[in-house]
Image (cartoon, rainbow, N blue to C red; front, side):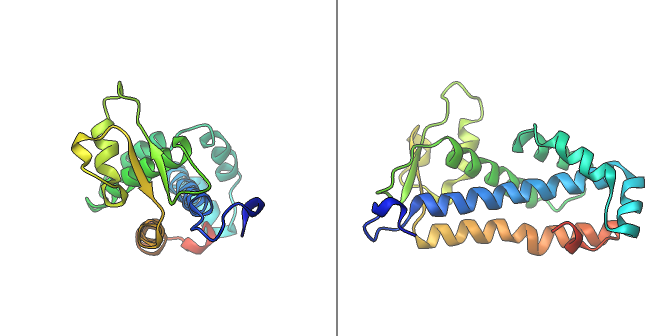
Length: 183
């Protein structure tokens, strides 16, 4: 797609960033579904029997007001026995989400510039969390680039899809429902 004819054959960072952001938002929705079904055993039983749940719908609307970080934290509380690699991956998704949502975009670049608030205590976490897709030495940077070239874009998409292909089906199986019903 050539947005307003401005791309001139360049890789569309804007389009790729949007796709990654939507996938991360989709993952956030699945995290919410798992939290709700774990938190409300009666809703889970009803959901298993009927493929629907009034509680699920009502609770989802309440979670729309929460940040990815707050949902990640609650998810970790309800699923304390997750393999240790999944929570850092969720942190990584949160960091990418923040970068895309709050970074500086240009129609002519393959990257987003992002500078976390220097007063935030988690700046090192943000920088560390997206280290695979940035340029330069992270330890000395306060402003960095999240690149959307072919390799980094594919790595980001694959990272998001790992949740859909590995973690979520395993959790649904453990909770005894068909993951496809919330997918």
